[in-house]
Image: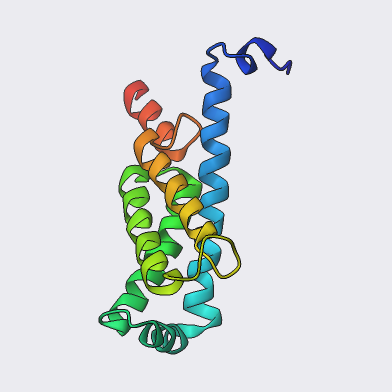
Length: 148
């Protein structure tokens, strides 16, 4: 497969764009999945609830479950490329909460600042706006529905 250097220099190449969306979607989905898995299985829901309580998150037990499930199931959905606009919007809300409750006043730069959370927020927003792209499970279902 030859790389189209014209596309890299400002030309329009839909295939490269679709590969870029897929790379972003799969990587960001993996990061969210890892964080959700951490909350559900490593910290456990009791640990996550306790952490949310310390941060002052409202309804910490409900919030802990909601965040853990949104990150885990949302990460899986992004990796597969299904429900991307809805999942992306939910993950934007998740990261707004993380910035406000966990990183507020800590500055910008990681590890204490909100640099990672803001990056994930922007990536989730971009995916919510672009959708999953053609290299996704949603696209496979759409192709089968139109040909079958």
